[in-house]
Amino acid sequence: MNDSAKSQWIVDALDRHEASLVRYANWILGDIESAREVVQETFLRLCKEQQSRVGAYLAQWLFTVCRNLAFDTRKKETRMTPLGDAEIGVDSRLEQRETAGEIFRMLNGLPKNQREVVYLKFQCDLSYKEISEITKLSMGNVGFLMHTALKTIRKQILSAPRRTQ
Image (cartoon, rainbow, N blue to C red; front, top):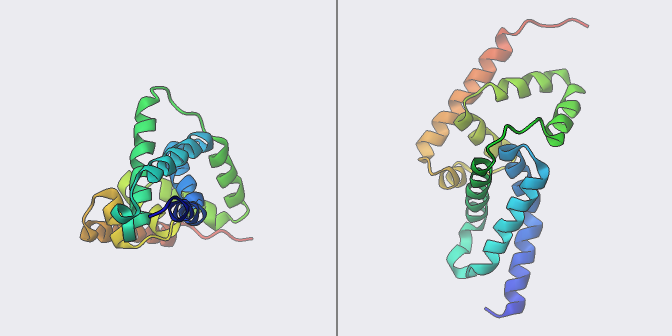
Protein backbone atom coordinates (compact mmCIF):
# COMPACT_ATOMS: atom_id res chain seq x y z
CA MET A 1 0.00 0.00 0.00
CA ASN A 2 1.42 3.39 -0.92
CA ASP A 3 1.65 6.28 1.54
CA SER A 4 -1.25 8.14 -0.05
CA ALA A 5 -3.61 5.18 0.25
CA LYS A 6 -2.54 4.53 3.85
CA SER A 7 -3.02 8.20 4.71
CA GLN A 8 -6.53 8.11 3.27
CA TRP A 9 -7.28 4.93 5.23
CA ILE A 10 -6.18 6.65 8.46
CA VAL A 11 -8.21 9.80 7.67
CA ASP A 12 -11.29 7.69 6.92
CA ALA A 13 -10.85 5.78 10.20
CA LEU A 14 -10.44 9.05 12.09
CA ASP A 15 -13.57 10.54 10.52
CA ARG A 16 -15.63 7.46 11.23
CA HIS A 17 -14.50 6.48 14.73
CA GLU A 18 -12.87 9.41 16.54
CA ALA A 19 -16.00 10.82 18.20
CA SER A 20 -17.23 7.49 19.55
CA LEU A 21 -13.72 6.58 20.76
CA VAL A 22 -13.44 9.89 22.63
CA ARG A 23 -16.85 9.29 24.26
CA TYR A 24 -15.82 5.75 25.22
CA ALA A 25 -12.45 6.82 26.65
CA ASN A 26 -14.14 9.70 28.49
CA TRP A 27 -16.64 7.25 29.95
CA ILE A 28 -13.76 5.12 31.28
CA LEU A 29 -11.58 8.00 32.48
CA GLY A 30 -14.07 10.70 33.43
CA ASP A 31 -11.80 13.34 31.92
CA ILE A 32 -12.23 14.62 28.37
CA GLU A 33 -8.62 15.78 27.95
CA SER A 34 -7.22 12.43 29.05
CA ALA A 35 -9.73 10.75 26.75
CA ARG A 36 -8.53 12.82 23.79
CA GLU A 37 -4.92 11.90 24.57
CA VAL A 38 -5.83 8.21 24.70
CA VAL A 39 -7.63 8.45 21.35
CA GLN A 40 -4.68 10.32 19.85
CA GLU A 41 -2.35 7.54 20.99
CA THR A 42 -4.80 4.97 19.58
CA PHE A 43 -4.59 6.57 16.14
CA LEU A 44 -0.81 6.91 16.38
CA ARG A 45 -0.67 3.17 16.93
CA LEU A 46 -2.98 2.65 13.97
CA CYS A 47 -0.51 4.58 11.81
CA LYS A 48 2.13 1.98 12.67
CA GLU A 49 -0.12 -0.95 11.76
CA GLN A 50 -0.48 -2.55 8.36
CA GLN A 51 -3.96 -2.16 6.92
CA SER A 52 -3.91 -5.83 5.94
CA ARG A 53 -3.31 -6.81 9.59
CA VAL A 54 -6.22 -4.74 10.92
CA GLY A 55 -8.38 -5.34 7.86
CA ALA A 56 -12.09 -5.80 8.37
CA TYR A 57 -11.69 -5.55 12.15
CA LEU A 58 -10.83 -1.85 12.25
CA ALA A 59 -13.56 -0.83 14.73
CA GLN A 60 -12.80 -3.71 17.07
CA TRP A 61 -9.06 -3.01 16.85
CA LEU A 62 -9.54 0.71 17.59
CA PHE A 63 -11.90 0.13 20.51
CA THR A 64 -9.68 -2.58 21.98
CA VAL A 65 -6.54 -0.42 21.81
CA CYS A 66 -8.46 2.59 23.14
CA ARG A 67 -9.91 0.54 26.00
CA ASN A 68 -6.53 -0.87 26.98
CA LEU A 69 -4.86 2.55 26.86
CA ALA A 70 -7.68 4.13 28.88
CA PHE A 71 -7.45 1.47 31.58
CA ASP A 72 -3.65 1.84 31.63
CA THR A 73 -4.05 5.60 32.02
CA ARG A 74 -6.58 5.15 34.81
CA LYS A 75 -4.26 2.74 36.65
CA LYS A 76 -1.41 5.26 36.47
CA GLU A 77 -3.53 7.90 38.16
CA THR A 78 -3.29 7.15 41.86
CA ARG A 79 -5.37 10.06 43.01
CA MET A 80 -9.15 10.14 43.12
CA THR A 81 -10.51 11.89 40.05
CA PRO A 82 -13.04 14.62 40.84
CA LEU A 83 -16.27 14.78 38.91
CA GLY A 84 -15.22 15.92 35.45
CA ASP A 85 -16.78 18.67 33.41
CA ALA A 86 -17.95 16.11 30.88
CA GLU A 87 -19.95 14.22 33.51
CA ILE A 88 -21.48 17.44 34.78
CA GLY A 89 -22.43 18.28 31.19
CA VAL A 90 -24.06 14.88 30.75
CA ASP A 91 -25.98 15.22 34.00
CA SER A 92 -27.21 18.73 33.20
CA ARG A 93 -28.47 17.64 29.78
CA LEU A 94 -30.24 14.64 31.27
CA GLU A 95 -31.89 16.79 33.92
CA GLN A 96 -33.92 18.34 31.10
CA ARG A 97 -35.62 14.99 30.81
CA GLU A 98 -36.29 13.63 34.27
CA THR A 99 -36.88 10.07 33.10
CA ALA A 100 -33.57 10.01 31.25
CA GLY A 101 -31.85 11.24 34.39
CA GLU A 102 -33.38 8.44 36.44
CA ILE A 103 -32.31 5.84 33.88
CA PHE A 104 -28.79 7.29 33.86
CA ARG A 105 -28.58 6.90 37.64
CA MET A 106 -29.89 3.36 37.36
CA LEU A 107 -27.22 2.56 34.76
CA ASN A 108 -24.53 3.93 37.04
CA GLY A 109 -25.78 1.57 39.72
CA LEU A 110 -25.11 -1.47 37.54
CA PRO A 111 -21.90 -3.48 37.94
CA LYS A 112 -19.02 -2.17 35.80
CA ASN A 113 -19.10 -5.04 33.30
CA GLN A 114 -22.84 -4.55 32.66
CA ARG A 115 -22.41 -0.77 32.30
CA GLU A 116 -19.62 -1.30 29.80
CA VAL A 117 -21.55 -3.63 27.49
CA VAL A 118 -24.64 -1.37 27.63
CA TYR A 119 -22.46 1.65 26.84
CA LEU A 120 -20.71 -0.05 23.92
CA LYS A 121 -24.03 -1.27 22.52
CA PHE A 122 -26.11 1.88 22.82
CA GLN A 123 -23.57 4.71 22.79
CA CYS A 124 -21.05 3.25 20.35
CA ASP A 125 -23.56 1.19 18.34
CA LEU A 126 -21.37 -1.92 18.34
CA SER A 127 -22.55 -5.47 17.72
CA TYR A 128 -22.34 -8.20 20.35
CA LYS A 129 -19.48 -9.72 18.35
CA GLU A 130 -17.55 -6.43 18.36
CA ILE A 131 -18.23 -5.96 22.09
CA SER A 132 -17.05 -9.53 22.69
CA GLU A 133 -13.78 -8.91 20.88
CA ILE A 134 -13.17 -5.58 22.63
CA THR A 135 -13.90 -6.81 26.15
CA LYS A 136 -12.47 -10.32 25.66
CA LEU A 137 -15.78 -11.81 26.85
CA SER A 138 -17.66 -14.52 24.99
CA MET A 139 -20.64 -13.41 22.89
CA GLY A 140 -22.86 -15.45 25.21
CA ASN A 141 -21.47 -13.59 28.21
CA VAL A 142 -22.02 -10.25 26.48
CA GLY A 143 -25.62 -11.25 25.76
CA PHE A 144 -26.12 -12.41 29.34
CA LEU A 145 -24.69 -9.17 30.75
CA MET A 146 -26.85 -7.09 28.39
CA HIS A 147 -29.99 -9.07 29.26
CA THR A 148 -29.29 -8.86 32.99
CA ALA A 149 -28.58 -5.12 32.84
CA LEU A 150 -31.71 -4.31 30.84
CA LYS A 151 -33.84 -6.57 33.06
CA THR A 152 -32.50 -4.78 36.15
CA ILE A 153 -33.21 -1.34 34.68
CA ARG A 154 -36.70 -2.39 33.57
CA LYS A 155 -37.49 -3.75 37.04
CA GLN A 156 -36.31 -0.50 38.65
CA ILE A 157 -38.36 1.61 36.24
CA LEU A 158 -41.50 -0.44 36.86
CA SER A 159 -41.06 -0.34 40.64
CA ALA A 160 -40.33 3.41 40.79
CA PRO A 161 -43.22 5.51 42.10
CA ARG A 162 -44.90 7.55 39.40
CA ARG A 163 -44.66 11.30 39.80
CA THR A 164 -47.60 13.53 39.04
CA GLN A 165 -47.24 16.92 37.46
